Length: 395
Ligand SMILES: *Cc1c(COP(=O)(O)O)cnc(C)c1O
Image 1: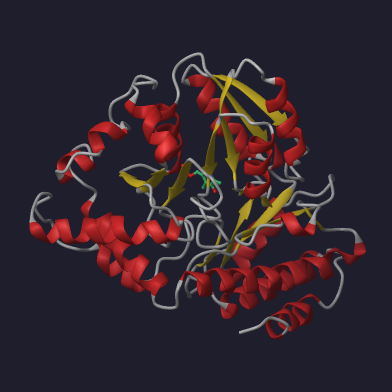
Image 2: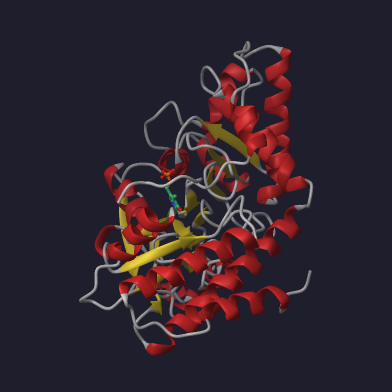
């Protein structure tokens, strides 16, 4: 099939659609990385990020993707041979753990079926048994984008505290930030990792790490893996050349400032509420489609379903890529596929960032047409249910 006229309707869980304001900011001219104009942009970004993470801690910006932010968090807080505990809620948790192992850390997974979050009691039990204090950090992926499972971070913090364990709590909030409630300081999170290209609506290539006092103490004590680009100590310097460990990604920082302004205009709570509403629409549709048993949510517990992405499973003898291909080639909608071992078994509807009801209803309508074209036995009433979910919500 030939691609037809019209925009690409992009609903993958990152990179997300770019607002025109952000794209315009990306075309900012070259400027002196130590001059006043860039200093104002950098200051604006560093200042604006703190309320997004809800932290008074330090913010570090890297010219890197989410994997870079993962490595930065590990490199600053841990040293070779130390042990980290990783609840494995999906592929992203697995890959972050593998990175820790590659960097020379001992890793211990808390396994799941990738359809449930890890019960905090399991984490508590493991930490209680660790009387020697071997475990130095618990690494949690807040929303695992592959599984669309969202973990209860307050529950994990409570588990660490109940065990009286000193491990740091390190969180990957790449796919949850700005889409669901998140409060780094209030929830006792020591390190948060984020990336620009999800709900922050900025092109890929910029990542963010926020560090609280316990994490900063660790890096200052020199207790860290070898590395230089990632190191917080140098980046705490006054010069922008130090803060960015070299030339800053100027256009990305300008774009981030514009995206932050777009979030500040309605306010973060309204942005989070909008994500909740859009997720409720998608979930209402999937619920109806699933009533015949052909499709089902990957995340089995409703309260654990992510506000930013929905993974939908198909039967074992059906290739989910057929749905993706048809929606893209016939109707111009791009959704995500299954990652790693889930390839062909699920499709993923991304609903984060620069989106609204029109996009979501459009995507759900395209999926409805795709199911019809492919003759798939899904349940009726999905679009009506999605529309009902718009009116059932406040605001
Ligand atoms: C997208 C994503 C990543 C990886 O980010 P990259 O920029 O592709 O390195 C990591 N964790 C989560 C939860 C993600 O959604």
